[in-house]
Image (tube, rainbow, N blue to C red; front, side, top):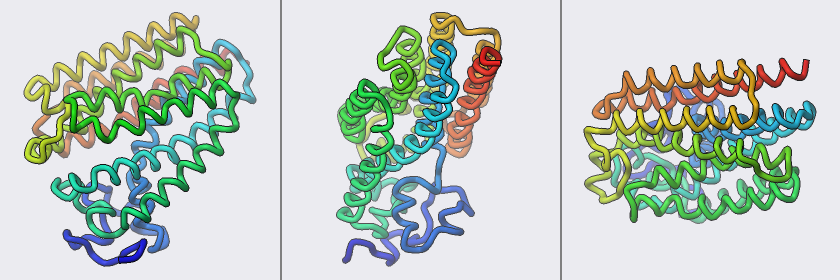
Length: 320
């Protein structure tokens, strides 16, 4: 088999990934030769890119409230937008390489490009390197402190795919990786870190643990059979209470970050909207309903947008 195989794999689904939205742009419009690689990067499921981006944007807005620099902030937002989606793709590619033997045994993941035979491990490794190089080019646009801080995140990213084999808290490690942007936004503006960024980072970690617990509830049965671990399995029937507690902690810590930064009313209105959205998720959450879990997980894109809107509105009010 060559670098790229277009033959149907064991599931017979060479042109579709089971958990991708139907009619996504990759399946409909991307050149056929690129589709397996775009699927590896989850370009057909962009929710992860949004979730990786929001802590970066929150932090950049928080720094802008403190430091000003309108032009710099807009430039950094553009860098974080492209960087988040590129690095999320790289992370997913790495995860699929590490998990290819597990993915073949899980109903939701066995149609992914590597276990289904659409892409070889060698081709995926080359694709991973290309994405990592693109991410490095973006990272190098920041100051030296931010560059070193960004590079240090790679240690967390590298160990995450293995955590489900050794701990029931892989979601906590994902929280560290997906929240690193809460440090990067501030570092990019200030060439250092301060209490507001650290509090925002801690709050974001709890947010990620909660929404990824919801996501993991889709795979509880298969994960138990395969022998991998997650907070969804750990919490079991108490998952709703745990998710609610993590969300509450996230709101509290982010609120403390706003207070430490001297944020205005509009920032707190954004936080209130964020909290209301999370509370609605907890009310609706049913750990036994996989389809609903996916809907609630994806809705965190909107939760992140609400908080960012409040922060940016506060920035614009001060700038104007």
